[in-house]
Amino acid sequence: MTIRNFITWRGLGLAKKCEAPKLTKEGITQRDGDLPINPSGGLLGVGNPIAAAGLMKVSEIYWQLAGKAGKRQIKKPAYTGLAHAWGRPNASKHRSDNEGLIISARQLIQYNNFL
Image 1 (spheres, rainbow, N blue to C red):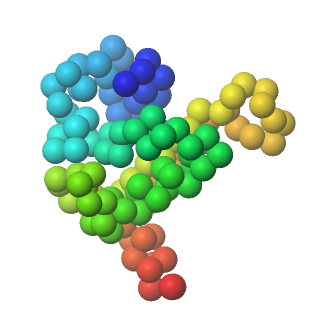
Image 2: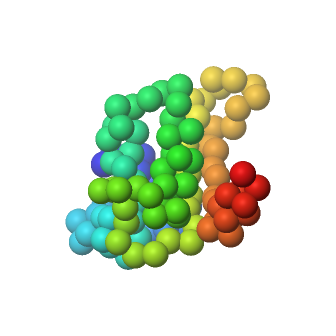
Image 3: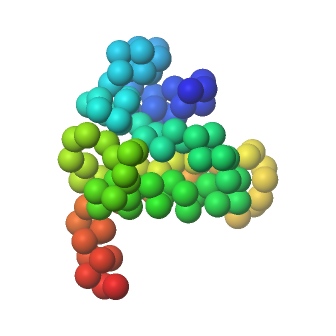
């Protein structure tokens, strides 16, 4: 876990100011916690696939919502997932510094029915 994680949780409204480390210490962000975060271990937990980072995050959301994450499966039912990434400052004029994606179970079902 890095300071970036804690800053992101605060920015997304998942943690109050200065409380993100406490959430981790108390196990709230673990797979069996009330607010599971990075059940795959995050990018470092999957080999840090820089070019495929966004796809990895979205894939993990799919697997979690579909109940197909295997040993990484969170313990409580999930209906919405959030993928977020920090861009490099000034890396590109066309890329936002902060990118996010929220996928709901309803969208997942609609997608599966489309296939």
